[in-house]
Image (cartoon, rainbow, N blue to C red; front, side, top):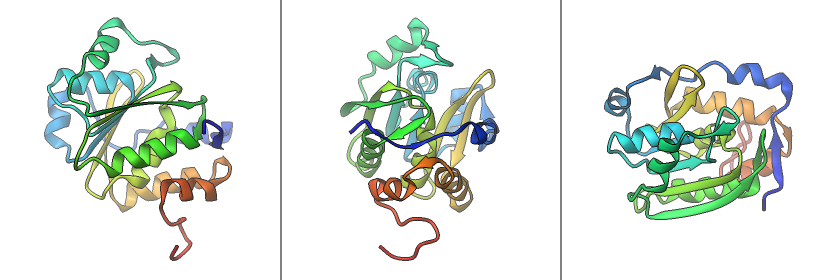
Length: 192
């Protein structure tokens, strides 16, 4: 289940460098502007939210930040978190979205009314923001880290969803399989 479904090619990397929403350095300010469910992608973001007293509905972590091991306080904040009802460990190679990540994300987001889920990724979770924008309910919030700047808050709406769908559609691999694994209609194709 860890086989890559789609892979980020070099030509799309520049498009991912621009934040998809406002950047925050204060977790309390971000939380004041966020709405449920809140999905956190990244260890440092997750640790800041936990330290601010908020357990994300879904958090994806890989024990790395900017290709290096996370600082001890980040690892401790995530490891000692008590607000997660479920914990999953999956595999997702760097610069890809694997079947196991997509299924875990879809399942965790579907359960946000009943449970909070921590997904630990063996590999890399960076690209999970894009499918999170596709499967999260409208009005929800995705938070991810912007290296050297802070935390990006993205409201799930038609605009942010279209950006994510466009990027996912242009990745190498099997985007049709990606939509199927996420249990959503393929953009531009009517009805299932």
